Image 1: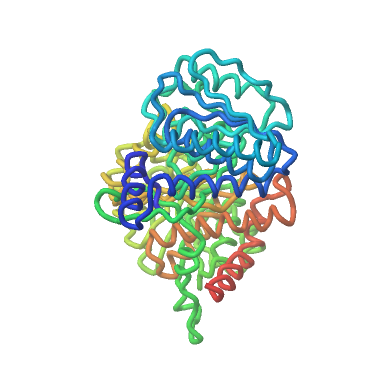
Image 2: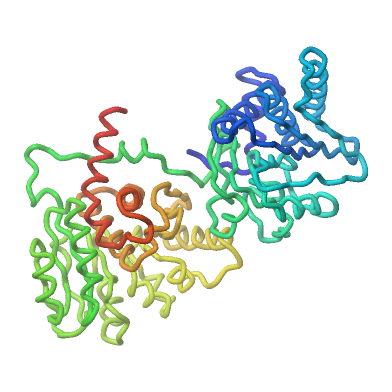
Length: 518
């Protein structure tokens, strides 16, 4: 699924209107119906609904929703802000439709369940109480500057209330992409956002969660011409795409054809990171796994990962010397290796000489963060898997997630590497500058060792000859799915990293079963 900019959203709307063809008013009706249907599914007819509509098309959506809910006998209070006497054409049409509906229903049925007020000057705000449903239709994707004045006051009034807030398409005041220069306390704090056809880039940034709330994309059949005007580097990976990535296995497969993975992991006292990555790699389908580790970890690794072969470092406590990797189909380096002076030197030598597909994670990323000049020596198309703190070591601290993403894209393109930004919507950034956001996972995965498990999964896929982009997108999706399956049986607080490995076979099985039904 594409993630389009605010300007591109106008392009696809116009294309749909011309080529479906459909009038802009009927397209608005379609969008409003989709939102109204979701509201009806979630809130009973006894819920008081208070609608705040702006003068543009987002306000037109809101007024159409007011009419639709009124038709279903919700008690609706609709407030249209028209202080400049400059309604958009479709907003004006839906204003008149609401007025006509209100009059007809009152005349024919004696029912007055829709109250409509048009504000042209002073506004006396209605009481907003717990149990009320507020529908925010003040401003949508067309907003290009921060809210101020009266509209900012309305936003603050809504945010201060105990009512549940639903935003149409995007919370009023939130820019679709970059909010660096926005006034953040002039943005609606929605409980739910029902967005039309395409997710908005801003939804994937942690600092915007408080405004967007829970969000859902509603498909209303908008047509994408798929030309240069709608070219985008941002995408949302969906389940069907992921299922198609799975290779399956030949009946004649054996351990020699399923890939030989190498894991450089663990110093003295950090065998746990090596264990988690190694077990995830084996559960991820690698035919063979060799773990390069110091002698201090031998006993525990042989006891916990008996399937793996151990390659013992010359130093008894840490990774201290590079070695030949020609026998391996893929390697991962970093989990629990530490940052001693011996390890630092061994790391850059190892990375420089190794030719197989490579994942750089954990302490290896911390080493790079302390020696940024070495980033230029990384092999082309290798994979870096930082969490936020490790990423800042590579690109420096940023003002917000948008700037962080753009700097990461610049680094990936400049060095021709893959960078996986781990988080709620883990983002795979490619050497071409494309970004694929992941949709699986949950807060229960905020636990030590979860990243080591992810490294093992991706390593297994690389060893099985999945190309890096596919290994990353499939690996991240599987990792998140294991967390979702574990949390469903346990709870967020009860999930630990080992559980992710336990549920990994179930995640694979679910994808294969779903693919049969595709």
